[in-house]
Length: 338
Ligand SMILES: Cc1cc2nc3c(=O)[nH]c(=O)nc-3n(C[C@H](O)[C@H](O)[C@H](O)COP(=O)(O)OP(=O)(O)OC[C@H]3O[C@@H](n4cnc5c(N)ncnc54)[C@H](O)[C@@H]3O)c2cc1C
Image 1 (cartoon, protein in one colour):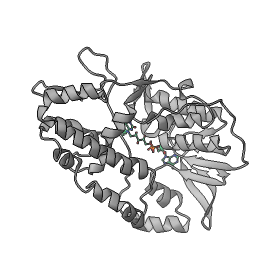
Image 2 (cartoon, rainbow, N blue to C red):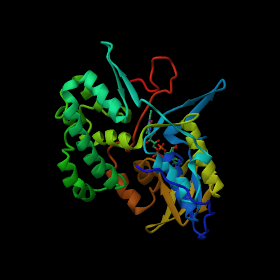
Image 3 (cartoon, rainbow, N blue to C red):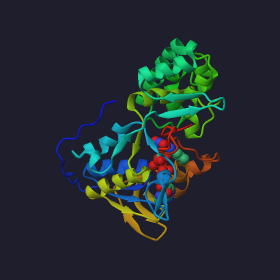
Image 4 (tube, rainbow, N blue to C red):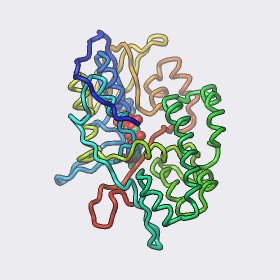
């Protein structure tokens, strides 16, 4: 992964088009910045009192508490949002490297420092699982292959129907995606501790390593290439930086006013209506709210929404990626102790 280098700041050239983005989480904010950068006058509408979505935060007694995400593993994804208009993300957000990425502690007193420092990681493996050095190299190659197929090629593909899933099937089959990440790692690694060290990441996305698809082994390669970063001041500062940049480009935010209906004419969206009664016309509307909620509730008046309503018997779930824990400076503790 290469850092995105900004050019000279430019102002978006207005296109005369207007768009509405529903949901001011990371996804909605990123899209709103992209649209505004392309000269499309964008209104970002958020149900809650603050932007951030799962990156919401609370303030109490002078302290700020981040609610969810803590670390960034693909900084270029964010840097691009500034570079689109020649800006530098560093104007608004300071990313600090986390090293080691994780320190794993076992009850028997064994520690394992996990990072992308190749020599350091090899030393750690030699210390904790000396018989697994060769197996680790094979696992790394496997992880790189899954990263290419599952993240680079399929990372932006929405699997909304069976046909799109079938198309991806050969690549997923090649990497035995039906197996669990634990089962796959165990085929390369003999040490139980190293197996745990290479599979616990699924817990960060709420997945059990014993049952979550081996596709998640890509996180190892993702972190190896991109590093693990922390936004100075917490994730709330990353959100604040994204909002600042969006507004600098001329975008507007509407908080504490959930969208209740996206009105349509045939297959075209026409207006967005919020709980307060605020209603506006847009050329395009994008929802980064839960996909079931978007089709079933917000588009309930449209033929497509009605079809989804009938089909949506199952509960909603959305993909996410996760890293967690604190930025501790306690002696003897790594910044992320697991
Ligand atoms: C505990 C935890 C830890 C995590 N740790 C990490 C981490 O360290 N690093 C990492 O990269 N990822 C992490 N993640 C995952 C990451 O937080 C999510 O992938 C990401 O925040 C999802 O962003 P999003 O914009 O897609 O969705 P959301 O954050 O869910 O945003 C959706 C937004 O839409 C709004 N909305 C919904 N309906 C409406 C409506 N009708 N009208 C208006 N607004 C609406 C919601 O209020 C919300 O703000 C973590 C997640 C959790 C829960």
